[in-house]
Structures are given as C-alpha cells and as structure tokens.
Image (tube, rainbow, N blue to C red; front, side):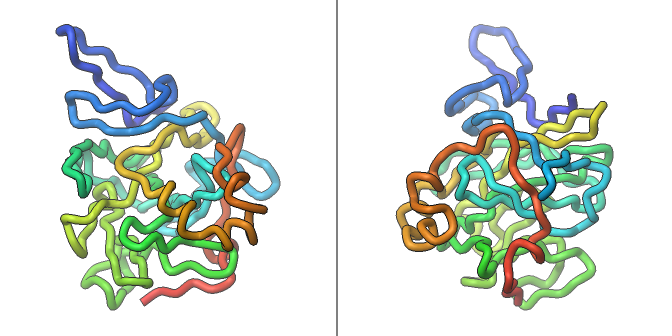
Length: 242
C-alpha cells in the first residue's frame, strides 16, 4: 500500500510514522499537519468496478463524493510529478503540509470540489469549477495546470496542494488524502487535509441538497465502502469555464 501522506507524531522524543487511515478525528501535529480522518472509501466506476490509478486519463477532471454523500471532490492525474512538501496556511493562520501526489509518477491528486471562496461546486446541473490542463488557456490565469472557479475567478494551483493563487490570504482548496494499493492499483480516499467548507456548504445549499440528495440530513451522511467516480463532463450537464 502506497501511503503518500504519512504523519509523524512528535511529543515524547519518539517519532512514529502512521497511515492516515488509522487515525480517527482531527489531528494538529507539531510538524504542521492538519487533517481529519474519515472511513476509508474505495473509488469505483459507475458499474462498481475499482478505479485503477494507471488507467486514469491524464489531466481530466473526475468527480467523486467524500467524506459526505453530498460533498463533491475532484480527482486528477496531473500527467507528471507534482511538487512535494508544500507548506500551506488557512485563513485563520493554521499551517499544514501537503506531501504531494501519489501513484507511480506521484501525479495523482484529489481536492474538495467546494470552492473555498464562495462555495461554488460541481452539481449534476452545472459546474463552475474544473481543472484547466497545462496546454490550455484560461482568462482567469496566465497558465494552465490550475483549478479555476469561474463563479468569482478564483484560481488554485493543483500542482502545489491547491494553494490560492488569486488571494494567498484566502483558504486553499481542502485536499483529499488518497491511498494507493500497489498490488491492485486501487485508489482509496481516507482523510481531509486542510480547512474544509463542508458545514458552510450544507447551510447554504438546502434546496439543492433536497433536489439531489433528498435533503441535508442524507447529504451529510458519511460515504461508506465505496464512492462512484465519473468524469466531470459526464457528471455535470453544463461546465462553465473562462
């Protein structure tokens, strides 16, 4: 099992490396890691077959839901190794460390699909947020290789833990901690790294949650076992990208 985001717990002089999937609750460690672990969930396709890391299309935005039934996430194979050990900071000043992508080329990343600015997100009707491949142009930023929220033109660096390029004082996108089973090539979501916007999202989109998830209570339930993963172009009827 490849575990890209091991945590080193410091305290009594001993250093212990542990997998995120073995930690429950919220952890703020001395080495600037901040995350909340949830149930380990396998990523599967629409037929229930395991998503294989090596079969992901390069620089294509995939959607899955984690850790709640109603919270969309972005899965991307960047096509080349990401940066490593990126220090990020929340609006409230908490620091954490993004370790980098996973997979054979350390190129696979996952982030919350809920924009940290005004909570825009993918839905079956439309999406204002997507990854812009490196060879494509966007009005929001001079270079590709970024996640753009076209709702209010926020830009996040997908190669560096989704730090906020539009306003560094605003939150990055929360990261989804992934694990890869090296033998089976299967991908799992195990934790959230960095500040999330889940509760604000649940409060702000009651009518949408009722339409797509039969209400906020069901949308807030934790995903268990597996999460269906689909290309954004097949998930949302309309994708708005500038």
